Image (cartoon, rainbow, N blue to C red; front, side, top):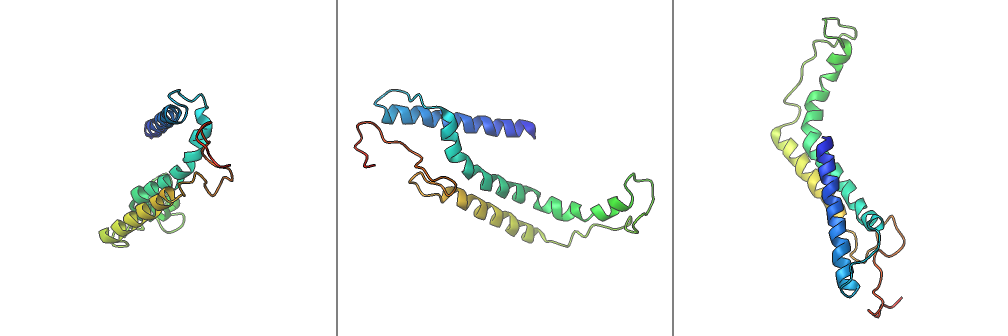
Length: 145
């Protein structure tokens, strides 16, 4: 799990470095921009949060539904020695609680609804969490500010 997070963070950082290089080469007249990549990464990190939440829901919804039912039995007999403290040690998991089609609908809805906000920020460079523009004008580009 930690390796997956590190791989994703490394790929994100590589993308940020690529944007820095491409932005510097295109805007700075061939020079690589010396702007730090931290502010650039902060401009895009807000789009990763809904995507991560969507994928977590899509991957772990069925696990939560099915294994969540066994919590009552585990609370009644924590060490697994046959005690029945709450009277729910023999509770069984109902695999008919949600059908495979229902799980599929939840997964698709989570992915569609979770990835839509990440891609729907206006291309002007403003996000709901920031008030300043995300891009700077090139010195000779004639930007109206």
